[in-house]
Image 1 (tube, one colour):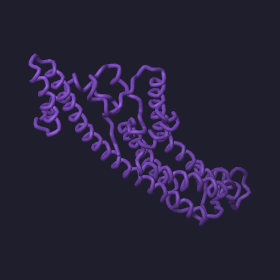
Image 2 (spheres, one colour):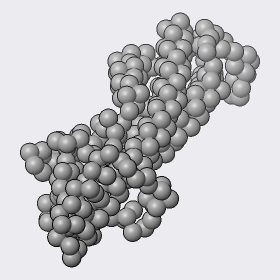
Image 3 (cartoon, one colour):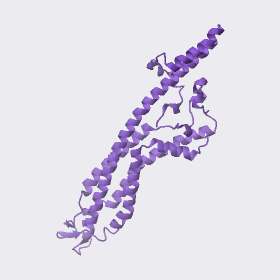
Image 4 (tube, one colour):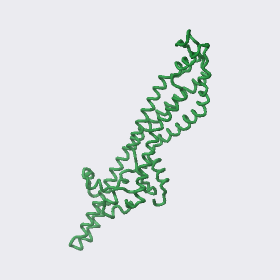
Length: 306
């Protein structure tokens, strides 16, 4: 791959297709969710049921009251939330790696032919050379997956909003110090006491705040991805127009050079080159999307980004 290993190409492609907001979301997920949950949440909730004390000796009453107080373990709820929220992100990365690996495999097996950028306008287009072009990281060419990235962002945002609503509905914002229970087999109203309620309340609100921050970053990431998609489409139109113009100049000069009049054949390429550099003719954009030339453009040239 012209000085770039497969791992470098895959890493650059993945990094190129994830926006800055997406990378910030990943940092928030790792440092403010996973690490906090493992090092602060697990010690706080590991003895949750053992320290749930009720002032009764009725067999089974404490277990029923604890199930009524906490139908779902808050710590396990956070674990499931983190795993499910990371799934769209991981699936998108696996999809990008799979596509890039297929391109690299096709390139190494000799099924494709790399054409340098400065030779595109010098050689006629052929199906073998433009169907698939390998990634040239030295010149900044990488495949883009903006559509797949926006799709995974939609799923991630919906999951974040759903888990946030479920979090509020199941646990609220406050862990009480005392819980009143009157469920069979409890014969009377029983007072149950929760261990470390203040610390658990702080942890609960912290995780809710991080979820709100994550949702905000998802919205910003979605906006950035939409803007990047629009910018890529505009650059693609400019590139298509430029390539079409250069090809027309090349074909016109080539046809004129085969004329009968030698003086005309000598002068015509200079005139055509001058017309190409000065932009003396205009292109109808509707011609740019004809199948004859649209399928002749390399797929790598249709995806440019800073």
